[in-house]
Image (cartoon, rainbow, N blue to C red; front, side, top):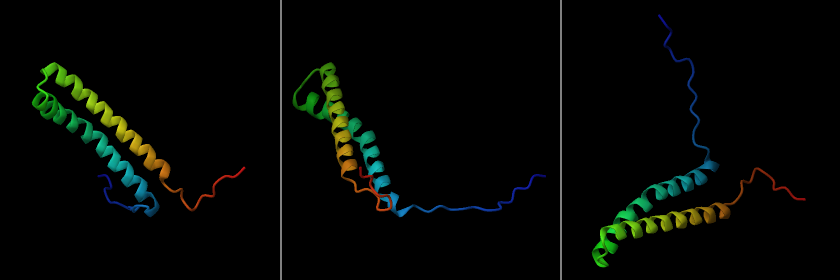
Length: 96
């Protein structure tokens, strides 16, 4: 019979200095997944077909444009947040 005992298990807890960037990445990942899809269907149904009375094919087209614009806005927001993040204190910045 094979030995199935666990000899040693090491738990690596969350590194406190990496929580902030991980949280930022998680928030923007969730936004990239949910916001474009949700706004596509919402704008197609409520705005373009409902309020503006467009045909279905036109509503699909303008809903897709809305989703693409939202993706670009989220990417720009991520880049701005990433550049404003302070560097770690443990690594000195290189100076020429």
